Image (cartoon, rainbow over all chains, first blue to last red):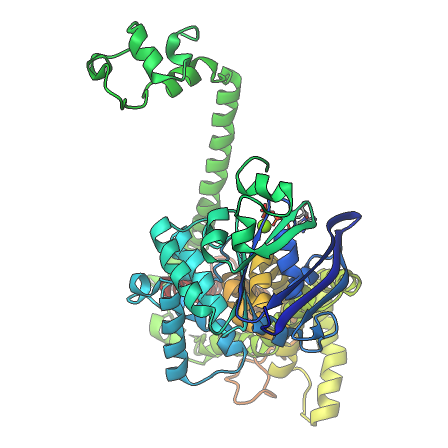
Length: 253
Length: 348
Ligand SMILES: Nc1ncnc2c1ncn2[C@@H]1O[C@H](COP(=O)(O)OP(=O)(O)OP(=O)(O)O)[C@@H](O)[C@H]1O
Ligand SMILES: [Mg+2]
């Protein structure tokens, strides 16, 4: 694959206090690919994503060593961490609707980035809500509180929000746990389309979702990168590692 | 009950056994492939093992519930009782005082309760005094108090935070008569020195003193309100690329606005109800203020100063009680309006 490298992770170690959650992980993410990240609970998938946009900083006792470069710049050296976070859209597994209206939730990040024009904002909000397959359900009540939506709708609202600042990299952390299968499929179609403009990291507990969407898949196990290869290889009868085969086929977990 | 075949998880097993609770419907479904899930087994199993609470536990709970209900109801009763007793003292003059009429009481500025020839009870100047001192105090205290609350809760480090909180609590503990002293001496001299006003005890002085008295309340209640905003909101906002300041005014202030409004209202309450400090700091002259350097008198200070001299049961005495009713109604209206404002916000 000769697409340029967007994210370069080298020997990333992350410790919460004295417990290490990531034991030296190295990989690259190329432009315009969907990288699936699979692994059992506690593998460190969420922690890995939180290192990318430095939201790990919010955990006071987390210590990160090694290097994570986004577009060639080490994230710990960037001056404008807010700009970095705007470049990376992040969808958390538990939706956190900000206590604002649906519209304001989606318009939040663009406003923070300095977008003021009303018509542009409205168009942007509509586009993001459509991409998150939420527009039809909420178009008549954009100004009601986002926290009044159902769980699955809130999850899609966070997806719309993550798209709202037009990120170049999109991290989805188990985005579909609260979303019904039909809507999940609609969002997956959108993700496939987004791949043309956005680089996507898809953390998922549904291995089949990685199989459907990901170009390459990374198998993380107890804070260790076991295998990273083209998705066909990971899900084939003969991945390089036995553990991969067993996890993917539900024999270990 | 526990030994029943309901424990078996396999529906076929139950149907085959055909005893006890196996219903006719299930038996009729007999040999075909699909079977409805056994509907009674989960409950049947649970019932036998469900722990029973003792009679004591239930009685105790009822007692506690009663106590809680009583204290809730009594809070309302106390407020009503206070209103009732104050009103009872005032009622005779309201319904037939010799020199008393309601409209002049509310809308006249002439307060001459002890005049030998022509007694007049007009409280407009006092009401305006109360409102102007309170308003000035809030203009100073609300931005300062809320700003300090935001700083303490969001921007300063843990060490500084502890120090500031201690200082703020100390400020809140200063008795109002001490504030009055400060107003009478230090503040009044400062005002004369810096503004050249003829007297230092005036509206400005009272406003500043009241502001200093309400700021600690606004800061500590406001800080609590901000602390109650879940951290997940902060993380979500920051993950979207908001700066700390954007986070404050786009997320935290809206999220905490009810608590912040409560903080402001408590500050207003303190300012409206404060007596001793304003009595000493405002100059205590019955006067419609035209500027911040005019002396004023407030409703509260007026009652405090005159009630001791008014003979019990006299018209003057009763009018002072009526002033209390007026004060009560004014604070009630202020709170009501604030409540409606909040409801209006909620509906959005
Ligand atoms: N804030 C934290 N403080 C301390 N330890 C943490 C914290 N967050 C995660 N950990 C630990 O780090 C390890 C990895 O957690 P992480 O959330 O990254 O796993 P995950 O792969 O995302 O799991 P899941 O599939 O359940 O979401 C776990 O052992 C967890 O206990
Ligand atoms: Mg996780």
